[in-house]
Length: 314
Image (cartoon, rainbow, N blue to C red; front, side, top):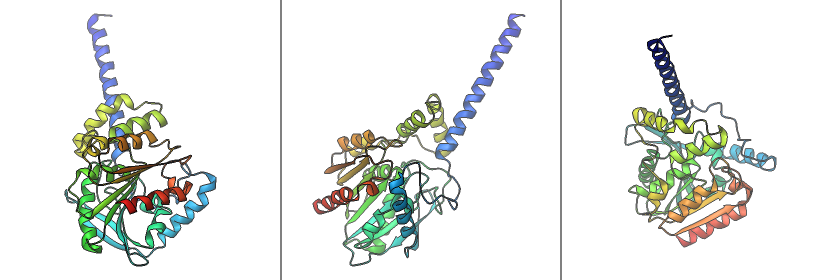
């Protein structure tokens, strides 16, 4: 066989490998950042995260959330997306306004199981639907990068809706936790007095690498630089452009960090890292044996005590 033929075969093989790598990276990008339908057929609860002891109460709280008399509200994002939310006035006299921010491919009904009931008595609640989730427009989820900009607009809306004379708090879970932490870098109204960041990650790139290691044997990690290129080309973001610890070094708004010690999806060390970086008044509540986004249901007394102390101090 001539060197010319061998060279041609080698070049062809290299092209096939390169083409396969590009296709694989694109598929990872789509799976990671592309919206997943309208969520009409979502299961009522995440058995992957709950234990049998919590599942019954989890489902009960989700159904309670869904039964509340919310009114639909909406805003337009800075890049022109129609974003939806649900407003629920306080059952009694309101002492605060709260914006609830759900996590990745999830809903507020699920992520705030139990938490919404806690707030409802004396807080006006706005439960938003993040871009590219449920009824909100958007093709791509940006893992807190653009979502944190949306939060600033939702804060302005909430002040117009429920009054800026009341203190305003942000409460996020999982990707929502990262979103509200990153919102420290936005121009927020003066009445935003505190943030609750429950199981938030450090940045989109880090959490993508962690999920690959934990759930996919690290198979996607070599593809991540190319995945990030697709994020830039198609979604207009760099997965490293917003890093919560860097933003929190200049934080002014007090933050309560919460994380379950048995969380495998977003490891607790990410909240610890965010906490250590934060320059604002801060507290951290680690809930023993709580899995992802289950801290409130696992130890309600500890979670509520941490929030009550936080609210008194800020």
